[in-house]
Length: 232
Image 1 (cartoon, one colour):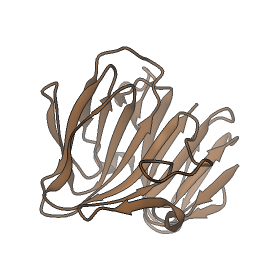
Image 2 (spheres, rainbow, N blue to C red; image 1 turned 180 degrees about the vertical axis):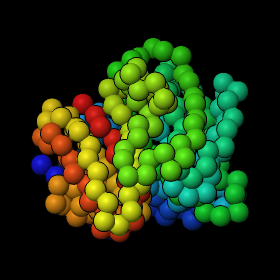
Image 3 (cartoon, rainbow, N blue to C red; image 1 turned 90 degrees about the vertical axis):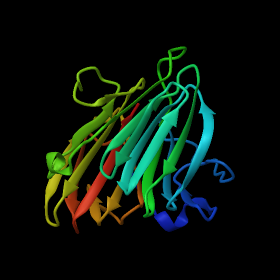
Image 4 (cartoon, one colour; image 1 turned 180 degrees about the horizontal axis):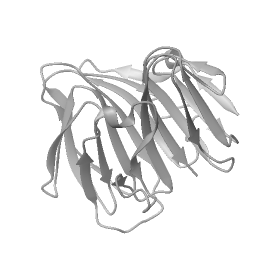
């Protein structure tokens, strides 16, 4: 099963400094048919105005991944962690028993991010944060794992979940595959460009929900950047 979820049909809110669209129920947007996709709970498409952002606020028992599409985001938390994550790179926060953090766009341009929340499989662990650059050239034409709960993915950022986040950049006309497994689910978004997935076409920022598919075959109709979450 492959279901395209058009971007223009998603919930969201424009707060001035933040223009947010929600792939799943979040904040004041509620859709009982879109509460989660397997262990994936949140996929927010956020545009953050220059010199603004989220003031310090708490989380617990959630794996929170931020994928920066454009600009940069600056993180600071009560553990003493601080870092700036640029476009194409990833940061991961394991909220664990509790963490308080802020996320600001300190740039002079709008920052665009995907914020992805995955339900953990490990509880009562200390909170943690990490970030890593992933040059886009390393994922040209094929998927590269950026964050994973599988210890075999040693080059990826670790998350405490039965999940994997991967990304690929494809030139128009290029094709690549992702081996999902029929017992897994995937949710994916083209950050840019137009793609087809097993023959289902999706535009930039559309959501694509997948289940019961052993292999996903991607074709780039236009140059595209694809972000995919593989979950139980």
